[in-house]
Image 1: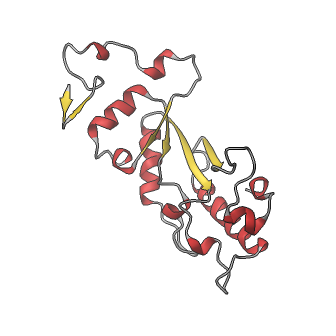
Image 2 (image 1 turned 30 degrees about the vertical axis):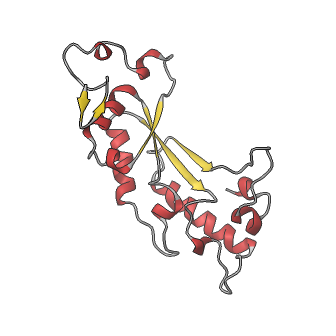
Image 3 (image 1 turned 90 degrees about the vertical axis):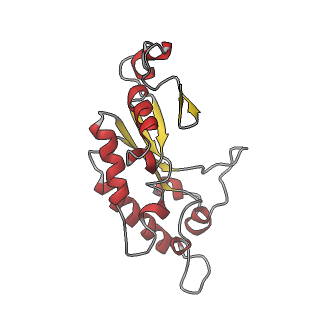
Length: 179
């Protein structure tokens, strides 16, 4: 079927063989999660084709960007949760496992998180405090509604060594355990 310039075998259309095929979430062993990363157009239900596909095929969702540090905690004393609450409701309303992605990452984190007052890298205690505040606030808000979290994202290099991120430089090699 061609819908809005895209072909999709998953959109309801009489005679399309894919419609009679079982959904991915229905062919795996009971208890397994089949997940998909979704964006705000999907969690806000603005992309009806994608919402239909997500709802039919998957039983778990992760946000592409909505729960990353810069989306939730742009300023030191301010959190925003409007779009994030809609993401959680999207999954819960559909009986899906809702996953949180990601609390600590070297990317998509505002510069203030790592900055000292003199413009250099903040000290260990300051960075730990900022990390704890962020995690406690975000995880606390969604306690009982988000099934699991990607706590630290992309902490390793391809060779298995720790990435030289601002988190590591400011806190130390134990920043993952602290998170």
